[in-house]
Length: 269
Image 1 (tube, rainbow, N blue to C red):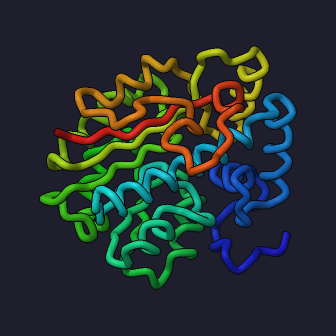
Image 2 (image 1 turned 180 degrees about the horizontal axis):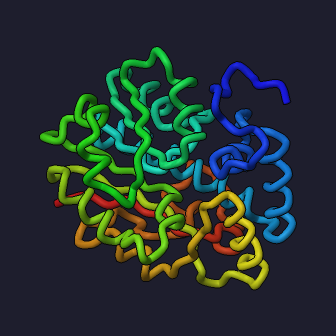
């Protein structure tokens, strides 16, 4: 396979990457046929998976717009960020305020390498190779401390990442440590695939996700809500992805049936 200019040396192009599979589902251009083949296999079991992933990406954009325009947030810590694709955090935020700083964090070396290549030259962004399950390691990273001022509010984004942490990794504890590190006035956004109302086919697709070494864990709405701990959820609370402050005129008729995930935004009092 001919290596494109955006694919750094050392990236294995013969094995599917969870980040590139996600990139394909949300309409990105940084994926290969090996990734698309796995995506199509997953989609055969769960025809709504691409719809859910696009809904998650649209929710991310709505949350970032709100945080920059209405909450005046200028710092974002995006954990489990994947490969930057059209309408990512820094694009949405910096289009409204060029001084917004964004740190992307991902455990996938493929996503990190691609991200660093794509974001080269943007002094208001940084890309960190770290694990959300190790919040102290994330918070101590010099790229994080060099770009984010933790004496001012920070928006923590955990969009579609906690579902990749098994219970043994203590995702609730990891989130609590991140919450502890930021000042009042900070925000926490979470989206998470749910087990609620999911058909049997979803479990088959869940097993397929293990081929990328990042198996998905489906959780209930109650479990997902617990990750916010005692922070104040903004209206409309923890809801199906499309139901969180939809854009004017957006059709919500498929939200409950097709979303397969919950999302919400909370503020530290």
